[in-house]
Length: 187
Ligand SMILES: [Zn+2]
Ligand SMILES: [Zn+2]
Image (cartoon, rainbow, N blue to C red; front, side, top):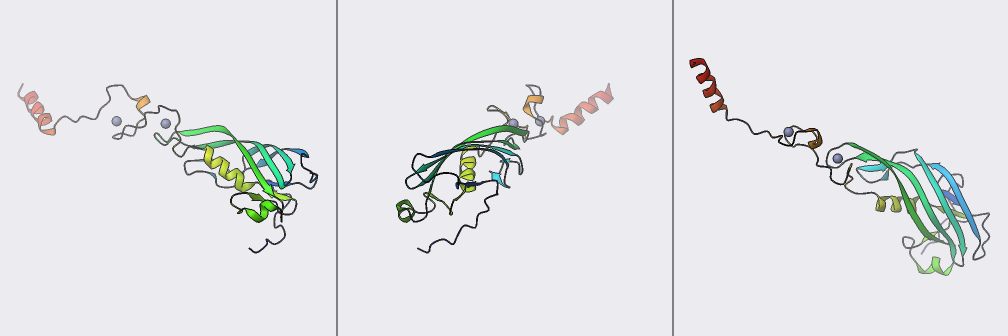
């Protein structure tokens, strides 16, 4: 397998973790607390974290023998549309991440695929793929404004909440309508 070229990550990028101050001694710990802007397209079709929104990173970086274990919580706002009534939804989600990033040339690096275990790129970690996976797993594919949202009347498109209980679109037959018109003129 070809070895990766030297890191192409930018250590100042919001979702790149710099581990240069973390000793490569198992058990060494650093915390990483930061608010960063959300990348584009973070989410699923109907509900996403708005691009540039504040993502609150509360992470722990721990040296283990084969690499760095990143764990913690990332919190941010999500916005979307109710799948039944199209009302706007916005709330905040907290996703847990726990991911091992193997050192280059470690046994883990040599014996696993990159999609199983993350990789350090020199002293840098690209957190974005793990963040994307965690967010996509957390967000509902069919978001609802509330669990029992009744949706819209298919005839007039008005929310069932805003319609009387006996709302219906039963048409009176137009022939009967004209008959009753006749009756009226005869009177
Ligand atoms: Zn709804
Ligand atoms: Zn209706």
